[in-house]
Image 1 (cartoon, rainbow, N blue to C red):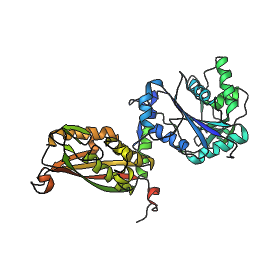
Image 2 (spheres, helix red, strand yellow; image 1 turned 180 degrees about the vertical axis):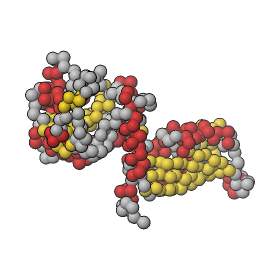
Image 3 (cartoon, rainbow, N blue to C red; image 1 turned 180 degrees about the horizontal axis):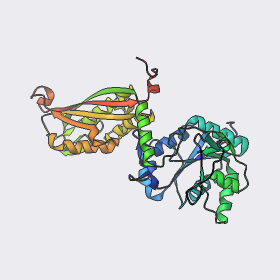
Image 4 (cartoon, one colour; image 1 turned 135 degrees about the vertical axis):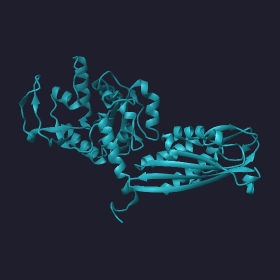
Amino acid sequence: MTASKRAAAIIVAAGRGLRAGAGGPKQYRTLGGQTVLARAMIPFCTHSDIAAVQPVRNPDDAEIFDQATMGLTYCAPVNGGATRQASVRAGLEALAADPPDVVLIHDAARAFVTPAVISRAIEAALTTGAAIPVIPVNDTVKLVGESEMVEATPSRAHLRIAQTPQAFAFDAILNAHRRAAREGRDDFTDDSALAEWAGLTVATFQGDAANMKLTTPEDFAREESRLAATLGDIRMGTGYDVHAFGDGDHLMLCGLRVPFSRGFLAHSDGDVGLHAIVDAILGALADGDIGSHFPPSDPKWKGAASDQFLAHAVELVKKRGGRIANLEVTMICEAPKVGPLRDAMRARIAEITGLPISRIAVKATTSERLGFTGRQEGIAATAAATIRLPWVESGDAVGSN
């Protein structure tokens, strides 16, 4: 794209996704440890030719939206309408104050859009003014009447499956949506149908068979299995942390505030359990240690809550297309007693990481009254993390021995 041209993207994420079954709106469900919405947005947020990403959400989803898109850069979300068409128009109107040359409109339920498809969409919109990604129809299609009897068999030669992102000259598609709203037309199932109705000629460009819409529970099960098969680069990391006791009336341990006769001497809140887990994850990623990401010399982290350190480490795994398989932490101390707090600690770590509690282990042991932990001068913790990354992340050839 030339420097004088500017592209924006609208991510439509206001739907309820009822056909996907139980579990809440489908765009906030996880696939491979990452939400569908995040998977859909990341390729746009990180594309060098996309100047702005405008999400459209349901007003009831503000909190869960913010959690799902943590760490991404995008325009302030706007609230969607009663229909997809109304939601797209809301996104277009939000961009109208500083209009781009072209706009890409993408459904959040399409979680596997690639940078290559985005690039083709931008180029097609700049060239034609209106274009959609399509893939061939490989199955025989039947036209069935109300009586469920076959009435015709259309030729596959001229049939295509439409996908998103659909790309348009911004002014043209905005005017088409405004006209449809004025004339009470709210029945268009996609933006290309609305564009055709408004008199625009819609071109096509090469889509991607993997860029399918997640609609049913079977879709989620299929994609979960496919993703699991691609995460063949299994990594392990270990972590260790220790903090001495000082003045205070509580300790932060695995994200919990534990009443105690002492406190930790630490730059942050001194949570040895979470610190050890963070180092284990960073070790599995081969991405430094907690000190390199959160330097103790930086006053920004003075007294900081350690849950944000762990959330950061989890986000690093997600950004590399991976998932955390399990976490284990062992507390080494004479006191306080960790046993009664074990399940609460597991639950808190699960809350921070988004992992099922069944994938988190918290253990405790003493040093038989030996060393500084045996003298009750402080607490130590060790941790282990297992993560799974795509093979391409490691640079190894798939199937190599």
